[in-house]
Length: 351
Image (cartoon, rainbow, N blue to C red; front, side, top):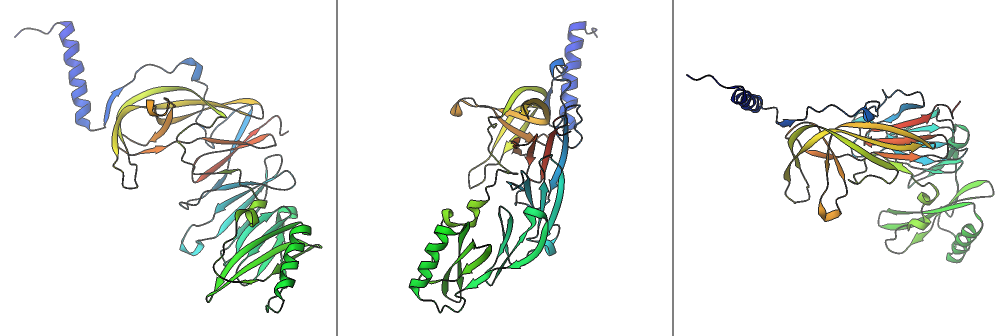
């Protein structure tokens, strides 16, 4: 039997290695053995373990309730309020936690709101709770006071004339600091309830209406409290305030895209690895990486990069959407996970 020459021996070893790898069933088609470029060795994964001389990363809200996102609202006193579903069991379904973040990025207060049939709205100094039967408000956003204060109710017995009701609505729209409608239905009857703040008093005006009516957005309470960020966004394209720098390929694998909605899925063979990004927080460069990401681009959308998190070979791809919201203060909110919201603070600016 002839001995294998060095060239053929190496080829034999390579084939044997590939064969054994396939037999292991790890789903990895090929591995990249090239070392990471020195330009990216200082980058860190972005989570609560991030450590930097310039920035502090804190997990400020977390929920395990799907599909409800965590939301961020600007509030008075140069602060932000975070809303997170508090559900941990069937008993806490519909309950919410609220967190108040001050101008320095510190948590100053929190509020647990159980689900008792009320809808909560933020309107500057006030937190307004409305239901079909009644409404109340607190000044928690302003001063942390959770004392329930009642609305003054007008026309509860529907004794007012249509002209008087119309005049009150017109006066509130013209002179009240805040006003909004809520449409209600009960036992086949339809109502439009006007809530308004005038003469230092929150009030409700009942109005019975003919037929089904809905409150337009420009007359709803939501127009006073604009959401600036939420977790769970699924846009596959990178936001304009983030720069994609590099992908360090680690494994070539097969994974699947499950489109849903009756459309068939499809498989992709692609490289998975670490992706490196940068953004600016308080005017300073902030750098980070995310592991287990595949990058795709196609001609149909101008070869714009799309990012997918792949947990394991032969698994389904999930859209990776990193989002930053830079506040008017020295910190930013960050999320790439429906269930987690982070705060990233400029250490030197916050001193």
